[in-house]
Length: 545
Image 1 (cartoon, rainbow, N blue to C red):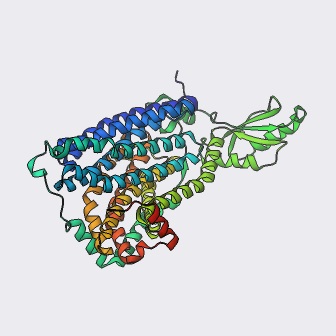
Image 2 (image 1 turned 120 degrees about the horizontal axis):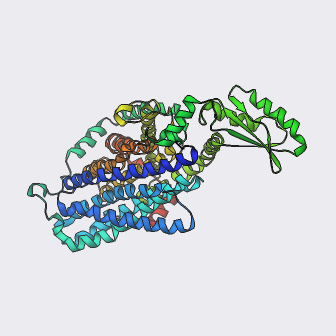
């Protein structure tokens, strides 16, 4: 005897995801440490992000535990806390430690002070940007998205706070010993201001219009598959082949008449309307999308009619049946329930709340970047470039998962669609991380400009000073989140691979090509803001020394 059904499939998916992510984390940690040794150039320095990561993860767990006492959260929130907390800890540690090493020609105490005035300020802006982007998920009533929004916001906030409190305290203790246990050939002085990233940006800015047009065209072309994106839900078919709920579901569909996943129609009508209800049920049974309809049954003050669709619960025919039944004339007020109706309602809820979430995301990101730069042009450009990188990432996701490419390599069976809530989560996470790298770059560009450099020179210097850092951070973060692609559950693969796509596109094409090209095209107009906003920025913003 095998037991299946929706009540068992849901918990089975949760258990499988927990096992998969635990395995992914075990695979990622050794690789992350080895990469950290290369990036941080020493054992002691490579242990610093682990220090920040552990404090961040346990601090996030504590915050989630306190919230969970009042509002139950999804178990998946813990996995995002681990992956995002570790990824941001690496990012912020790399930025702070690199700047501290740059300043170590001075007295260590003075070097730490300068580090906190520059890198510390950037980390706070970055963590605030990531946190508010993920808090936009709170507008959705779905427990999964709500929990992920809280988990991500807590992880970003705590990672930022630990990076400007506990990490500087440890650097004060270490001083020049931050380079201890590092091979001599790795103890390089900070890279020169005329390195490869500087030369690349100068080459781009010699032909900015051509680079901007070609880069934008490539991103738009990569994003075109996203125009035909389809959505599906989570059922037993996302489980591995050896999972009993999946075996039961496939056996029922292959070997038995359609007997599962009924659509239940509840009609508010008096007991005397039995004849009308029978006629109504007969009309439902005549629909091509209905395989069988049951007799009307009296339930309290209403009648219930069960209709079994021809296809599976998430087929287009079943979903259209729900919409038709809600719109068709009936002997009383109609309410439709069942797995198909739940998916239709979920789609409608996501569609209704999405504009609000996007408005919150755009407004808060714009405000934070304005406070950072004093410009209204740079935040607008950042929003547009984020949308370009995200559209390209979604286009690649559609090609891989919806169209069924790389099934053998990634070990999955395409559902012909993407799970409905994952694009929303992916949009928020990838948008936040893209803005995170933008903050790093814009901070160094503005710093160079405040020190008297021209617009083009400031861009070249900013890209040179952040090139290695952001590339390394993107690589390490891609390993931390890309490990999700090893999951046996397809929607977890989508989140992991989609985030990797967005991060790598932003850290390469956007940052190395599109940013310097657009900065060169606009010149001093990059820094424009209306007079009232300029006065506001001078009053509230922290200026570089």
